[in-house]
Image (cartoon, rainbow over the protein chains, first blue to last red):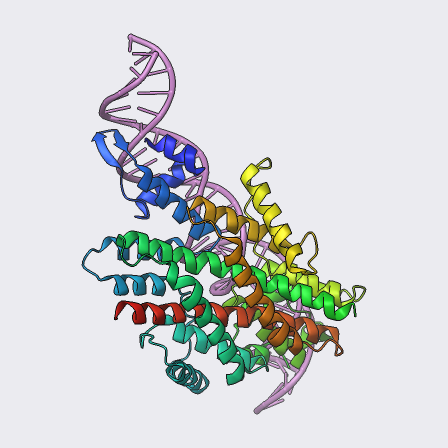
Length: 211
Length: 211
DNA sequence: ACACGCTGGATAGCCGGACTATCCATTATT
DNA sequence: AATAATGGATAGTCCGGCTATCCAGCGTGT
């Protein structure tokens, strides 16, 4: 398959494909001559993944590259690789004052919450900071989250992850398929959940206010 | 309160506050003279809301403005106002080919799913299209979502909305507080849920792979 | 009363991210 | 031999969210 076919089948313009090649999101095709390269179905597949993450997941190009680098580095084991992918999907934290008392307390709350749940989460997981920031923000907005509230969301998330998400991942298959599946699950069903929440809220609003 | 104080208390630089004023995110302060205006606690509150939506929710400025316009338009009733706010929080849809067969089918699936759940959702709710896009994308990625899967997420979302989210909203209070609460709930707890999902997945990955 | 600093208002510039356009030398293809 | 496509490189575009500069008018402290 040549680049024009790749473009036609994926719907991605050629210059954009070239951009992805430059950015390392897509590996070079097999060079057959100085001005020809052959692309395979793996490239098409990868291209579709990139577009899915960009369009539906709004994952920045830099993060996608990190995920891909994790896959490509054969030395790392599967769990580390999944971890790297996971960490890449986090939104980069807002810079905050170093000696921020409020922040430190929130971060502490988060750590205790995770420990209390018995979750096996790395001590440097970016989600810890993201959650801390969310808690601080809620407090500043005058709507502090109670621990009971947080537990509801945590348990909901764990139920989904345990019963419906991680089970889908083919740990015994090739590593790239495992990461790909994980990323797709996380991002696409994350989006679906987000949309469903808004729809459910709208529906409830209608139910309550028309009564 | 003058602008410098507003800036100091919120941590937002003065030029940025001016930008928000220009963009209509923040209403003008009360003019006390040609070169003085007085800002109140409502402005501070609003400013914090803006920053929360921007930093944690990554809601674009244009969407925030729409929410605020909905609040400010006194003619609309509360349900419509909440709807407007909700619709503003949707991510703008990717343009797609008009006569796209795959798309039309997905959109149909979505409509039937929502009807089957008995949800009272407007026929033009942007979430319908967002969900359809997600389904199409999953299909293109070779991981089509089953109806059973979708139902799990839908029910999860409804449980959260019914039991933990819409109940928090003070429908009987002033309208701006209601919208504000809704937006905060949707965005902040949406973020929290997203983070919890990633953390739970990491934890499950650790549990499975270290066994 | 007068200098200095802050204010509101306006305009223009900057920056990062994701493309998009152009050009070129080199092949394939017909 | 003419045409078209390819890979590679470079530069430009567009948008969103600020940020910088300038200015004239006030108002406060001395």
